[in-house]
Image (cartoon, rainbow over all chains, first blue to last red):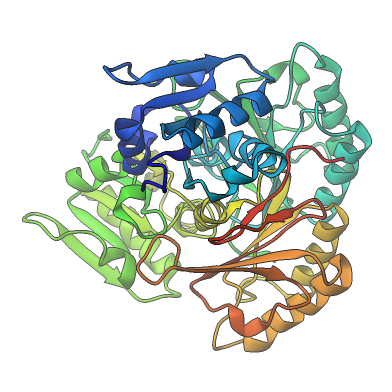
Length: 253
Length: 253
């Protein structure tokens, strides 16, 4: 796995929380690493050991963190950047490649690998049944990096396409009104009876799932640890004694 | 994990091919199973052992296979239905829930779990860089279960929404002309310069990746083992001495 300098960079997904959802590939990379870099709560999931330097950093410094990782790898260190879920889905992989493209030419020849993980929408979908079993889309509702009208446009087009929809980062303290507006747009475009899943902290001790309809959904049902999935027009709820099953059939008609 | 009868059903994702991409959760379920059910090449990935009955079956018998699995679990067997990738993405989970909903009432109280896996689009995306690093959609191009006009409608709406797009089952011997038409629609909607990835058999010895543009893409570049990803208008290609990196920045503007 080593490049010319002996250094390498792996951008690795730790999955949604449960250790049993971390791939052996990621576990092996962490075992070989000299440095682990990432957002504080993700680095906290990596066990300290002799010879391993942990570099936890705050949220919203993704580009600095990415440049730091590239710089360490260029110095010959064995670096793992950790994300929760999958690093390629609204996580650190894009930030690293943005820093790479803007940075030193020498960085382009580094040995860089992205190690996939179980992303939040697939963990949530599995827990609820199979709401993403037919065509679907994934939208980041954070408007830090995206103008609000674009989010609304995408919601309306996704509804017209009859995609199931998975929403990352639905709600934060900084913009509590955004997700209420998302629910309004969806009720208008999909109707009150459309199924919606709120899946919080899946695979952790705080896991909490709720299946309801857009008509009954309230913005307060989501926080930043919640994955929200809205079904397509074909999505069904199977009631049973325990939690209902939410799934989308394979056939479109 | 056992239900009242002692039987249970796990619908498990084996990932794209490499053993190092199978989660420990799935490995543990297979170690406890009495029966493994699935499409022939996926069951062939499970090591035989004393006390484990393997039930390989042919393609396109998903509902029969699902009913068989539910029936065995109801008899008290410990059953794992295996899919490649993630069972909830164009795979067996929806088929099992279709059979469950149409079948015996007693099945509804079975202990059923879906165990997520690394789905093909995320394995392909990781290998290429991070083309799904911003909003994206996943579309099954097989028209076995979907009328062609709906596929074309979804392509056009996804292009208008400026999603990156991941395509499963792009091409088969039975309908070689369909994917050529997909490329025509995409060239019309996204232009000739849009980036496209053909990622074949990712994480297996036959892995082959090709990054090009819609203008240069040809239908023959894909077969049924190929994952196709088309970038959004923001997706970028970083050239380097080795394979180029394909990624979509986190920001929409």
